[in-house]
Amino acid sequence: MERQAVGEAAAVSQRALDALVQRPELVLLIVFLVAAAFLGGRVLRRYFGRTAGDRLAAALAERDRVAVLMHPNPDPDAMASAMGVAAIAETVGTSAVIQHPGRIRHSENRAFETVLECEFDRIDRMAELETEAVVLVDHNEPRGFEGAEYVHPYAVVDHHPGNGEGLAFTDIRPNRGACASIVAEYLQDRGWSVHHDDDGRTVTPRLATGLLYGIQSDTTAFTRGCTSAEFDAAAYLFPAADADSLDRIANPQVDGETLEVKARAINHRRIDGSFLVSRVGELSNLDALATAAEELVRLEGVSAAVVLGEHEGTLHFSGRSRDDRVHMGKALQKALEPLSEASAGGHARMGGGQASLPAATDGGTPEDIESRLFDAMSGTI
Image (cartoon, rainbow, N blue to C red):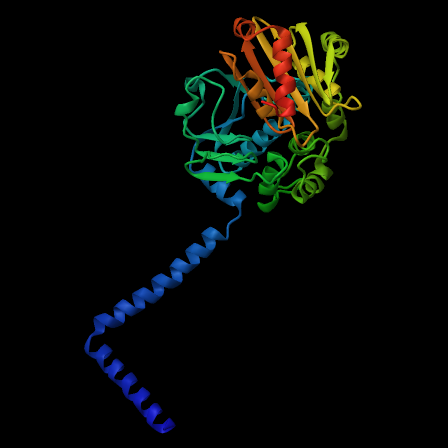
């Protein structure tokens, strides 16, 4: 039986060889297909085996110039991430300009910009973008300037949930605590050293300080939304970071109005259960609202706080939450929903909003608005 099977197999093989000899074009076709499969496999392995940092660098290298765009009123995480992406662009021969809509507010954010000597361009409309090749950092859909809806990002790097996509590159990781930790990973995977490197791939003290502070700030000193990736990035960046610069950013000087607004917020506070609302009246420094909200949410027995104040005909809101039941961004949206010419949003832990004073007046008395804020935080609306 075995001999018969072997004989039949040999006969089949011989017939196949005879067919190939009679038709040499089949031999060429087989050789071509084998070579294509081998080379194609190598190309696929090389492409899919690349790190995200390598793929971003390759996408950046395709452009002579890019605009690294931060979200409106950028925070340290956005600013640091933009610095990192711009640094990667420079190493592949692509010039980068960092831009943002809105203003850099809050004393911490202004200190970051000043201490690290950042050069950021403010824009109000799409036409002011440096180039059509826009790289979004720390957000995944353009917003906050005229014509934002017509911008099609070239690349996106973010840690917030969303459906935004880049034409050439997209890396959105909602599980990360900070966008800066993603950018730090790019640098590390591409072999950037925290010590001097002659090939130009060195994480400078300025960049290391910025990225480290961005991670620290967005995770509230590694206590909120933090993952092992943030600790790994911090360990990588720490040797090159400048301790004095970190201290100057974290502890900026506070202006007199900020202290005055804090005092008014404390004196005018209303508390219902564990929720607090305070109206501080007219103010010129909007950053003081956020500072006051951050201070008041730390009061014993308070789990969520909203501070509101008036500036140039607009009523502004800033909220903070330590309560897992209160998504501050959604709570403010609910509270301001009946008001025309009003907008609000934010994250679970922090949010903001604004409404024109005429619209706010049409929505009822100040007490009515405060009641809606309490209802929104308690989930009754």
